Length: 142
Image 1 (cartoon, rainbow, N blue to C red):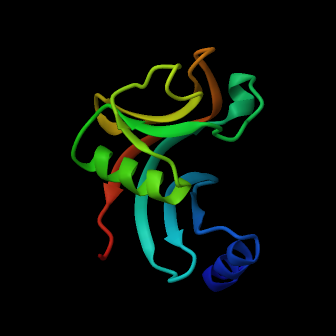
Image 2: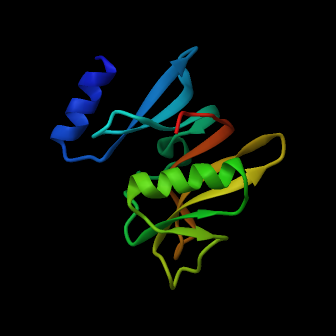
């Protein structure tokens, strides 16, 4: 399936953004976030690794009453902004309280690589989806 076909399918499903997973050696190597209407690349990140929800013995769930939270700055914050816009969720600096949001996509810095994206249920403190370790954010055209 070509990128144009992926964007057409995403548009038919009413999505504003599409996440394309590029495979390297059988594993996710890069994630590209496209705006469906314009076909423009909004963010591209190199993955260091992905731990699937099934590997953590949890059933993946969508973010409900959620937010995107970032505990870092620079490229990690730029990635959080792009993710928040794509998911139409508010962006929060720091880890939010369970009283404010039920779920969160939390971007936190890590030593040796850019950071990790955790999808969490704040009230239970449990994961809702995959853990994505991000090596770096690639520069994309404006």
